[in-house]
Image 1 (cartoon, rainbow, N blue to C red):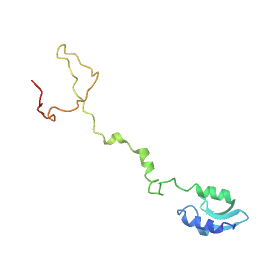
Image 2 (image 1 turned 60 degrees about the vertical axis):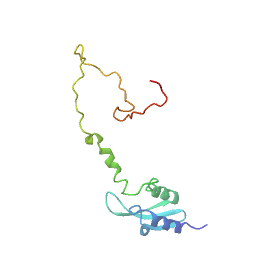
Image 3 (image 1 turned 180 degrees about the vertical axis):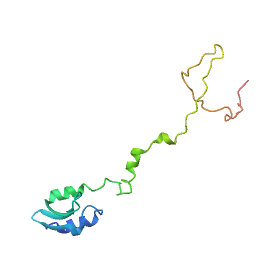
Length: 132
């Protein structure tokens, strides 16, 4: 069956930079993977050994969802959180209130109706065989 060392090396090659480099995988023996990493807070290089399952789980945390590409899309997504679509809308024009021609009171719009065609678009078609 093999030790899986070749698979581990090829996995390291195909992963994006920043997860773990091939040189940082120190050993793969007895179901454990030893690797070197740089501590985020101290900046010092440290060594660690994990089971193969735990190591693989940590590596797969960096695999992107289907259809995503590193930095290209993840760099754009945070911008959506700050995007305000109302910023680009023109301000609404205030219309004067519609007044009733009889009493002069302000009218309220109860219902609107969209006309199918305007009178300028409707062509006059002569009716054939219809008595007027």
